[in-house]
Length: 425
Image (cartoon, rainbow, N blue to C red; front, side):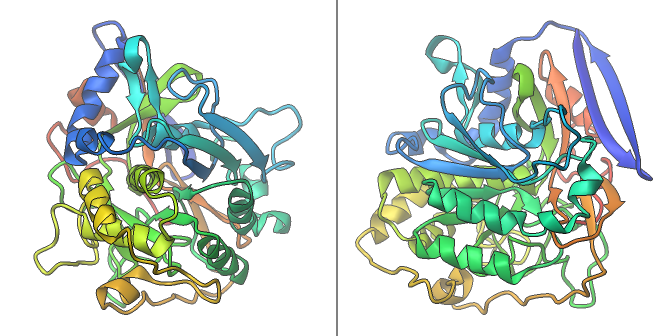
């Protein structure tokens, strides 16, 4: 039997919905469900040039399960910056982080690695850096209110840089920027590290006074690749933020990934899109290990497919990331020496594409909120963070119709409309 369960917060109450369909589990169904996304990104063609070998991608998230069969042997468990928030003896769930890591560097399992999740860069290594708690963890509110956790993002970035990361994935959002985070971004770029972050899931709400969805951090920092989510029709998913910080897009609707305990999950969000772009960045860095972050970003933006008619728009950025296209562009520019000097962060939109850097939104210190998996909970402290996706567990045969039903939308709905609310981040 297939059990499809998903959780969302409604009015602050955690609700589980479960459906049942026929047929036993088969891991090859998981791989088969990935094929449309892999084809969209032209991953097979890219793998003839690079599979990410020798590259380390730091996943700043809720933690990664190093024993999942699709990640075993590829994960180094780094520092836990949330230590002390949960009561003693409580084990972290590590759901969101495992999910993102699998999309980046899952290697599958079974004969020839043909079953389970295959990541965009299957031979890359993952450095797990825990900087958030998931909303079901008992220390969630403590973590998002205690002053001692305010700078976990900045500390996590610096830790990842100092422990060998080539790419840092941040499928997280927060409302407020801090000088410590800005300095950490500058430090990472000066050390040659590529930073990728989710643009946020507030796009379905009414635009602000400036006509855009809210800016989210760390995605909106100059120098960070801000990633929006595309639906199955390769248009902006309705929930995906639209504003001038968005640089590129990637698939973000009905995306399969791994979860702790050899489970598989399906979900939607800019989190998943960000992880895929980090995987493409890892392919580039494996092929061109000395390529500077601005040039990696240039390859990502110039190698896109499904480009907007005007070349750029605030929902899809410069288009949908294409792994083969990005590697081809990287080959073209690999002889250049453009690099950040460490005295400031380069904004690829402004510096490489003739566009101004995104505006920085100033918010009063007492205006902040935290969102996880579609729910909203008040939080204080600048460390208030969100994982930007809605997820559903799939233990058994994966079918698109079942996945769509689990997400609360009818099969064939590529926009994310009708699903559980994402909420403010």
